[in-house]
Image (cartoon, rainbow, N blue to C red; front, side, top):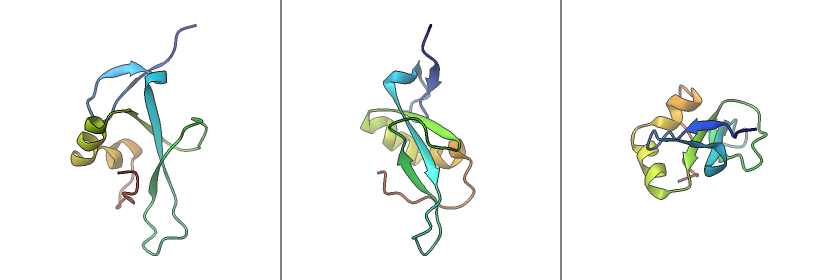
Length: 84
């Protein structure tokens, strides 16, 4: 059985899911502004829409500059930037 192929939100290159990390937006109940927080889904089991990213600082920085996290995760407001 072949491995699923996903697209990195930073560089837009396609790669097997095993080469990418999955991130999701989780509600931040403890934060005063209520902004969702982007977290790494290491087990790939967290609920919600996920986005995929290479394990490369350049892809992370590119995704951050392009607001790709908000678009890919379909979050309308601000995101907590603790991931980067």
